[in-house]
Length: 235
Image (cartoon, rainbow, N blue to C red; front, side, top):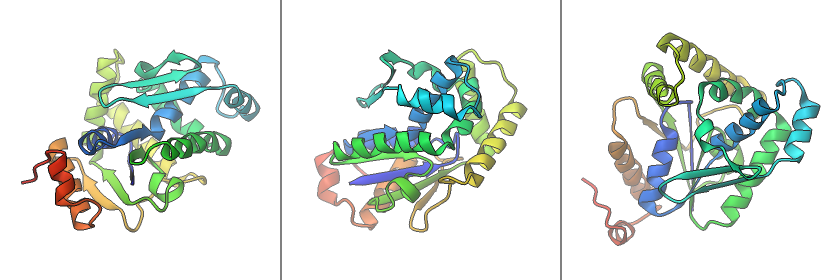
């Protein structure tokens, strides 16, 4: 089974996807983290987003190994774990300028496909998983959240990393990121027609997970025996 979770930046879709994968005992994969790893290397090499030749050469000579064991993430970029750098302000503000490149999207797409082939059940999170990467996914979810709440959450991430930034700046950056994601020519962020919409603005993660499980039951993707085997109780 493939569960595709897409949504806006900072909406909590990564947290939701990880928790759902852990609850179901499925594999987990984040496309966004891959694009961020590529962005880390781009920044390290001081490559401009318009230097496609240099970016192509960089991609052709890049190795990424991404794992998640239910407790922690490891992102090996050319053998070095860069996971702690993925969600810095610098990377967040630059990643959408890189992720729109067709050859970079193709590089990530291949990693996604290869990962799915080696996992019988997997939760994949990103911005075009249900619309482009796996249009036949068994269950598609679109995660959104009020931008003020998204910005507050992102502020906490930045503060934990030692980045100093105002709330107004984060909101402005998010609006810009949303516009670029939704209006890019290649794989724009959209909500698929048959996707389940979930708003994380006010609901705790546990409540969101319960809503997803109930929807999976309603769609007969899982059964009561499945929940019982995993000792999952719904209200």
